[in-house]
Amino acid sequence: MTTYPSIEAYEDARDKLILEDRASRFDADAWDNASDLEKRACAAVSRVRKEEHEEIWKEEEDLEVGSPFLHAKATIQRTRLFAIIRRMPKGALLHAHMDAMIDPIALLQLALAHPNFAIRTTAPLLPHNLSHALPEFLALPPDQFALKTTGVDVFSTAYDPLSWASLLETRERFPGGVRAFDEWVAGLLSVDAEGCYRTHNTMGKIWTRFVQVFEITAGLLGYEPVLKSYFKALLHSCVSDGVGYVELRTNFFRDFYVRASGEANLSHREWLLIFRSAVREVEDELEAEGRRDTFYGARMIYVTVRFITHEELRKAMEDCLDLKQEFPELIAGFDLVGHEDYGIPLHTYLSELLWFQQRQRELGLHVPFIFHAGETLGDGNEVDSNLYDALLLGTRRIGHGYSLAKHPGLMRLCKERGVLIEMCPISNELLRLTGGIGNHPISVLLNHGMTVALCSDDPSIFQNIMLSYDFFQLINASEITTLLSLKQLARQSIEFSEMELEAKSSAIKRWEKQWEAFVRWIVDEFDRKQNASGGIERQ
Image (tube, helix red, strand yellow):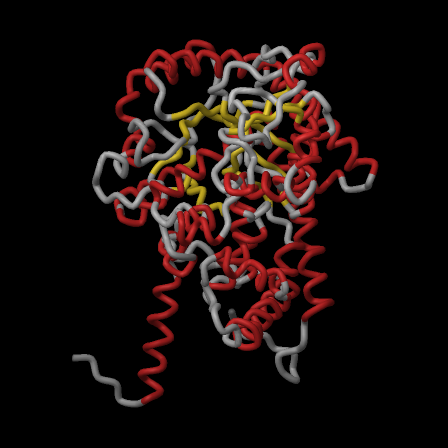
């Protein structure tokens, strides 16, 4: 038994043990490497957090630090800590799905600008049906619009669910008016607290609801004039939230979108041309505003779904390589997406995945795997084992990696190989992997020195646009996590992006300049000297 000759000896041993334990954290050297200004800002932010834990979170009758996100969101928005996080330059958003990125009402407004949009529903839009009548949207060829929609009444008991009606007219006639219609659609394109925590409170139920959102979104987004406006709105939204670079997981499962003429033959190649044009226009617009340095660029990760046939996967991979040859600066990687627990394991596709790597060598291309893996509660089952295959196949990053904390050997391998984990705390909570940030495995990974990037996954669905809420959740719930911790998370998100080396170097320099201005603002707004000599305690 260990004995201590005095209280002082015990306290010394305790301090030493804490330092030894925390030496393995990803941010262990952050304080020693920080500038004096950063240390002052760090101390100020930690003080704000402590004060608000006492003044806000302990005073809320039904909330506490780490409460479910959708219950706590309104309270989060009125905190000083969130105001600070909102201004923070957050680096890169590395895990986000292209078709779930902007506010749902903003997406609807983009579609409403085009009078040839039509709607059909699974049941008449009668008051007692609104909770389960699901809409589908489509931009019809202008010369066929009147022919297909005239006389169709979605509010009639005799309505045929296969019939298209005018979207604008339906909105005008909706019970409660246009605002009620907009709120109805927005509610279908996102999840709320009632849905997540009560009516869809299992992974199976919430995933059914989750997939449903993408099915509804597809018709609104899949129209050429909307698509470009959407890309631009998405990129501006990123910049507004301090995100300078984004890699969008874009689902190429559908062969075609609808072009401006109403014909459903807008090819994947044309999607990328539209995306490239949107990126360039945003760059020009930010340049005109004097904010060009806040945007470092955007790329796409080619994804398809994880329940397709072997032949369909081979076809998708060939398409991806064709696009990479023409747009090397836009295609960042390849992934398979969908509910991992119900999808086909990576190992089943091994022949195609190995072919993809061999074909790249033959063509002189580089399209790294950036796999979703470990987005499961499984432990040693077939789904959890996707982590083994992802690492054996050389994945550059791991999307989610929720179950990785159960695999010390794989965690060690990730560190040795420099594999970053794209963690999505709010997404994991709302898709029922965890009850909240307090028992999310991100703390385990960070405390073991893993390289992590915070990501928002599907921010329009989860109401966490773009990254501020995920950063807030982490720093508010973990007292060992400081402003300097967030700095390292932001910086390494850029470092582990798929930007070319020169562009990455430029992005880091611009981000460092933004960071310096940010910490100076914190000091100006929130700093009070810690003691008469101006000393600052180590955080």
